[in-house]
Length: 255
Image 1 (cartoon, rainbow, N blue to C red):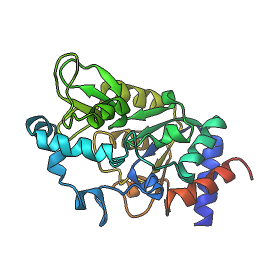
Image 2 (cartoon, helix red, strand yellow):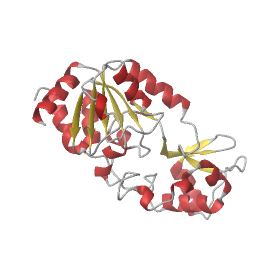
Image 3 (cartoon, rainbow, N blue to C red):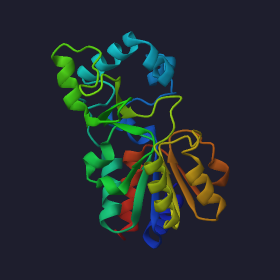
Image 4 (cartoon, helix red, strand yellow):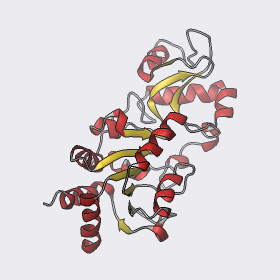
């Protein structure tokens, strides 16, 4: 393990790194993953998070907004905070070694840790903002929650009456084009990929590290458990992001 840590640290020192993050980087902040034995889908029905069902059933919308109102679903009122893994990526950014972070997460913890918005491509959207599905107007999610506090259990757009949802990508929705374009722009300037806390199995997001690895750029994987790309990884580090990433940054900084 120590030899692999040193080798990975040298890659971070010498190259321009693209971080690719999944749910595993946020579990140490108290956010469960989705598919694990204690994951989100053991408590919530994934079918309720399909866009067609969300649009068709006001009761699903009411339950969702109630969860946000209670500070769950990692939205505007969540009490989760960044952990040492998030902060280590900020250190890499400040050292000029990180070209950016492509994330599958919707929790906003990368920005809360200190990465600027322009350094993060949120492929699955985020819970910080909400939008009208009809006229596309947007608001901070907290603004919509104030409507819920005032009695609008299923809030609608004050301009056109359309359905309002958070800016997360539900099943059945396309990934946001602007975020995908930003992610590929970051990838085009990276000399290596650091994949953290992802099984690298959800497409099309996983195409980004897969393509870079296929192009011969080193792929370092930090994860608890196997991933779909272990066979093409240059280095694979088993363990928690909050433990491994600070050690990698120390090595990269020559400490």
